[in-house]
Image (cartoon, rainbow, N blue to C red; front, side, top):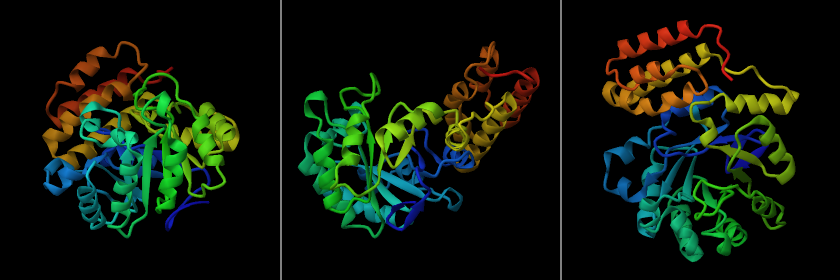
Length: 330
């Protein structure tokens, strides 16, 4: 059993990565239904929370059915991080996670996310400010370093654990790599094998199949896996991995009916949470991923991303289910 503070997770848990514009409550609910053991919110700007920005506040919404769930924050100012952690603590998630891994320019330029990788002392001060301002377990998600010439994850892991970080998730790329090239999990294995490291260490990067999940589990000795992009439009990956671990066999791939049901749920829950108009608009980017690999799908996709009324969208989903009855998705 893996423990993060008082949170008890199963042996080798599968975590849903925090992803901007993806890991909202409707999507997290689907991933929980399909086997995710722990999940995180979209990352939230500490400055946005303090300014009472509406979008930042919405990201604080969590529900009992998705526990254990963490709220992830980012920022480059100690005072703002401390105050935002106090705000987060009032809504009582299971943990607070700090993002030191986001590579996008608009975050890095503010000295936050992966931008902090260039200043480990600042990283430690920011993390300590959060730890000192909450009763909740604090975890960190980060990368190997800024670039290949400055991989500092060994020092980072030791220093974070020393100040009380309860678990560490490592994306096995540098900031310079963004999301390109191959991830290098040997660095994660080295951290995990460090006799000084006792906190759980989770690996992230390029896990997109049950076979790869099992290979990385055996090869690198990590405590669990965090899955990000492979779950977008495919929440079934969590149970597929778990089934493969137990049996060495593959679950049947989700049918078109399964995919339609997932989209119905996603759309319904998005409208319930965000309101009808915003729920419809913000679900549109997900359709391509849910129906990936289905031939001659373009006319249906065009309808899904242009129609503005729930009854019309649900009618199109009924059409898709009927049109592809018995179709096997490759």
